[in-house]
Image (cartoon, rainbow, N blue to C red; front, side):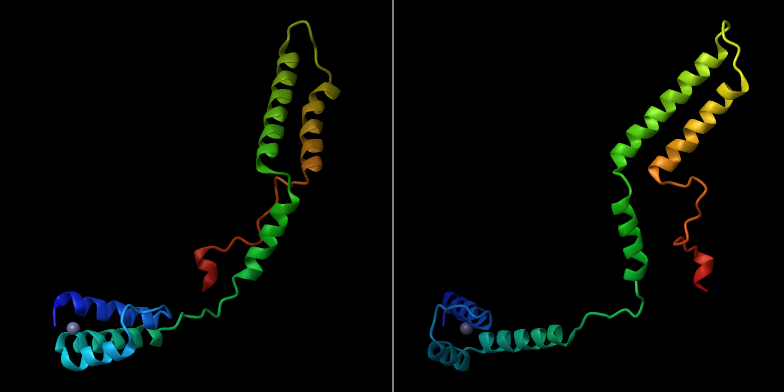
Length: 147
Ligand SMILES: [Zn+2]
């Protein structure tokens, strides 16, 4: 048998195993395998390899990751978008900067109320964003905590 026909036989066998239409009939394939030692060996090796692959299973993990991920996703869906937050923080920075410039103007003597204004602005800003700058992340797990 020539190598070209051997190749056709092997392609046909792969097509049959993939559920596709083969180039040669099953009768032609079986006759060739009986007479060709190379193809017979090749097919045995393929069978062995696919048995090895079929014996493999995905490792299952006992750790429940979802319970840690789900609250973070839900929390991030509630919060305003990052880009909006970035613009709001930039605006806050500009307001505080303008406040400071007015405060140091020589013609202006700031009273206690004006000095407390920047603190009030920051306080209201964080309340409107629904954020606590002093919040401790409860989901944070450090290496030493896993023991
Ligand atoms: Zn062959």
